[in-house]
Image (cartoon, rainbow, N blue to C red; front, side):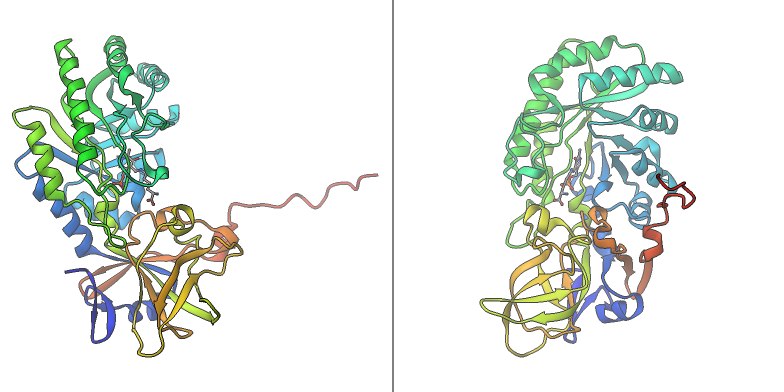
Length: 421
Ligand code: LLP
C-alpha cells in the first residue's frame, strides 16, 4: 500500500491528514513517509539477502539528516559526492567504513577529509584524479582505497541529462583504457586497489542495460585477475527507476535475479548505490493554490511552490503526479500548475484535469528524490520545510528558511568611501 492514500476523502501521509500538516507547518512543505523509506530499503536488502553486499544510499537524492539517520540505523552505507555529504554522514553517526565516494571533481581537501574519516573506497573517475589521490594519500601518510569507475558505454534508455554510462559522458574511465589504468594504479605506492565501479544512469526501467554493462565489467574483472590484480568488490551503481506516470519500473527482485545469476560462484562483494529508488516514492511536495486564472484552452493554477522548490519539471520536463488533497466534486478543467517565479519555465505540472478552487491544497507526488535536494533560493524564496511522518506522528526535520537566512552571508560596501572627484 502506498504511504500516501485517501481516507475519508482526504489524502493522508501514513496516519496524518495532509491538511493537518499544512495547518501546522505551512506550505510549501515536503512531506516524507518513514514507512515508505524503510520499505524501499527493505525491498533492496531482501532482494540481495544471502549475498555479500552493501547498499550505499546515493544521498544526493535527499540528504536531510533525518533521512540519513533512518538509513544509517538500518545498516545502510552511503554513496557521497562531496565533502559536504561526508560531513552529513558523520553528523548522524553513519559508519565511514560504509562510505563510497563518487564524482569527477574531488578536491585535495575533500580527499584529505575522506582519508582522515576512513571511508571504504574512492570511486576514481580519471587518470589525473588517480595521481592526485596517490599524492594526497602519500602526503598524509595513509593508503587510499580505490575503485575505478569504468564507463561501459551502454545506453540506459533514459533522459540524456541523467544518462552517464555512454562514451560521450564526462563520467568514468573509458572501457578500453581501464585495464592500463589499473596496471598503473597497481604501481602507485599509496593506493590500495579494492574494486571496480559503474553507474550507467538514472531512472532506468529495464534490466537489459544493467545486464549488458555488468557483463562487460565482469570481463574486465576477469582480465585483471589474470594479471594478478584481484578485486574485492564490484559496485553496480544505482539508477533503478520509480513510477512517476505510467512507467513500469523494474522490480528490484528482477534486477537482483539478473545480478545473482551473473555473480553466481564469484567471490566479489556487491555494492549498490541506489538513490531515487529508496526515497522517490516516499515524498510529496504539499502546496496551496494561491490564485486561479481560468482561460482557454487551459487555465493557470498559481500555487505557493515553484521551480525553486522542485526543479525537475522545468529542468527535465519531468512529469510528477498531481492530486488534490481533498478532491472536490465539480467541474474539471485543464490547469497548468505554476509557481510565482518570474519565468515561463516555472511550472510544476501542465495540462492536469482537476476541479480546483483557490486555497485548495495540492500534493505533487513522487517528490522524495531530487526535490528539496535540488531546490534553490531563486527570487529570494526561502526553502520549504521538510516534515517526516512516522505513523501518526509528524516531525519537522528541516524548518522553513527565514528571509533573513537568505542574506545572512551577504554584506554591502562600506559607506565611508571618499567621493570620486
Ligand atoms: N551513483 C552515482 C555515481 C550517481 O551519479 C547517481 C546519480 C546515483 C548513484 C544515484 O542514482 P539514482 O539511483 O538516484 O538514479 N537530478 C536527476 C537525477 C540525477 C542523478 C545523478 N546521479 C533527477 O532529478 O532525475
